[in-house]
Image (cartoon, rainbow, N blue to C red; front, side, top):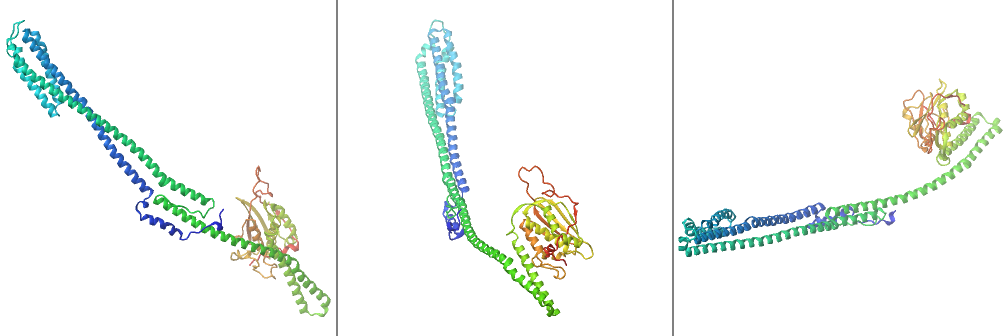
Length: 573
């Protein structure tokens, strides 16, 4: 991991990091965000597709219209014009046959031709309604046919004739009839030519419309493909590539290269994101530099602390040996002086000697207690499973004389097994029990109750007595070293006992306090972590080995006189 040696600071901070973005913000398109680019791109694409779609719809409609015109008008009009010509030719054939032979059966083609003519005219009129030239051609054909029929055909058909002989009227008007029907033929030819030309024109227009339609739809497909390519390329250049570059830079930073700058590219919002990440990187670099400086300072302080502890160990050794030797000499030679020259000294001199001996003894006791207090957590630190029932029995044996002299009665629950240092836990129980015996009420015999109960991951213990008690205002003060509420004459001790208890409990991960609501007497409550069962353990351990204790055990124990002062730090008002 990169530390302060590999961190490069960038001047300017977050404000400087955002300065390029503000400069870009003044340059038109560079201030566009990803959302704006997407909106504009989608809008332009939709507009182009809408225009091409409209053109395609127009081309499709035009080709459909031309197809309908060719199929429904031009071709039927030409077909019916040909049928009209056939009907008129049949009429002319019938009239000519009847005029030459005088036989009535030759009029059947004429009669059928009249019917066919009317049918063809009825069909042609709506087909040429929208075409002025075709309508004029039809009127010309109809007028010419009506003129021929009125002058030649109908009079000849109505004339009586002798079968087998020509009709006289037909013979008389033969030349006029030929000229009239030639006019009909010319009108029919012109009509058919115009209709054929119109059909050819419509076909050419349809082919052009189809080509236009195909071209428009091909252009639409090409534009769609082009738009897809542009969208893909735009996303790659505008979003994917900047995000990949940003991700690459961020991964460099996460691997410990805090001096690697974060590049800000792409649209405005991605640039702002990159600049924010860059500002965060600089802040992390600054924090890591500060953390590195702090670590170095802590290392120096730890080295100083190790030197101080080494010096303290040396002092403890000196205090336990060298400092106590002069005190023993002072006490011994003062007592020797009293025995050898006692008959020459007055009462005041004996009193001074007693003061000197007592002061030397108390100084030895204070040094010993201070050594024990300083060694908590340093010298005795062998954590293992500790059977508190066994520790309590040992404490009762140590304090048996003091308990017997005070007439104390102790009620104790079965105690569990916890993980800790056996020596320190023994000092804890010895201080608590000896204090409960020492600070007894003069008007009643001491009654001491020791309880234990499981509370989640903790064991909660209490040591209660019916002694002089502790006022709630001194509930914190009694755990401070050398803090006493009574004189040495009233209750002996150095004021270290409860301070040592607090240090031992906290060293084991627990808490200790005075129960302010308990009375009469005092009740000290403390906790210790519960022993975790080993993997695969099938059941809870029995009482005395980590199980929930059951109340009801009473005992009378008596410590020796030497242990009576071990917990002299508790002070009662």
